[in-house]
Image 1 (cartoon, one colour):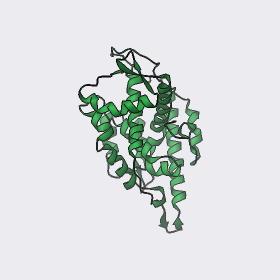
Image 2 (cartoon, one colour; image 1 turned 30 degrees about the horizontal axis):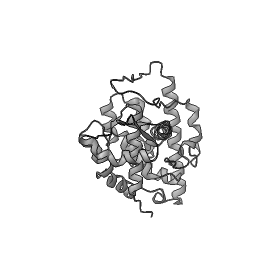
Image 3 (spheres, one colour; image 1 turned 135 degrees about the horizontal axis):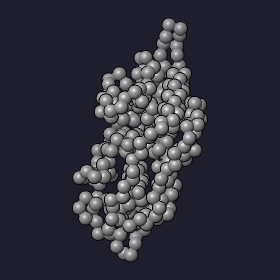
Image 4 (cartoon, one colour; image 1 turned 120 degrees about the horizontal axis):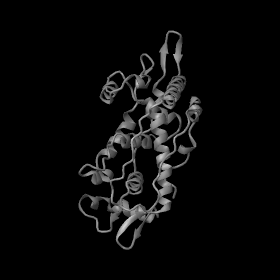
Length: 271
């Protein structure tokens, strides 16, 4: 079984993307003279500067470049795809073949939905699905942490945790302790069932549920949309990145268990 690790270079890259998205979409320009917790971002900002994802403006502050904006467009495309596709596999009851997301539109209160997800019958198979599709589980778990607010920009000390905190050890531990797709085979009365057939069946079931959810969401007549209120006094130096919403049939390709969106092909960081 593969042992997952994360290198200092990977931490730097993921942290850099996270800070860069903050700079582009908040927007936020960091002063050259970093103060307080922002001092812990120095090595990340230096890396972004070296990669030309940010630049120094009027010898006063770091601002994103157009190259940086393109990287964030790439990242947010992958991140949005993760939320729309891979989160389906976060809670599956392997004993009965049930997905928590089958009940998504039946539960109106967010607290009730979170309570459902905390039930002990669910198994998280996002790493298994990522492995089978030959994607990087480290990136998938990193995105799940971003989604869960584990790198909270509004919490004290987030800058330190971003690069040096134990959160990276948690990501590696999750990848190594997760259920892996090659562990899913079992013996039945009819004979042995291969791990390949199990994971492919899970991926197909999840895809159908995901497509059905997108169809239902598209037909809601009064979908609530949260306004993007800009309460920042920061000047915008590059255009913000807004990811387009796809029509439901965009996701039909995921019915093929081997399908991988072009958004996930290749490395996130292009040198």
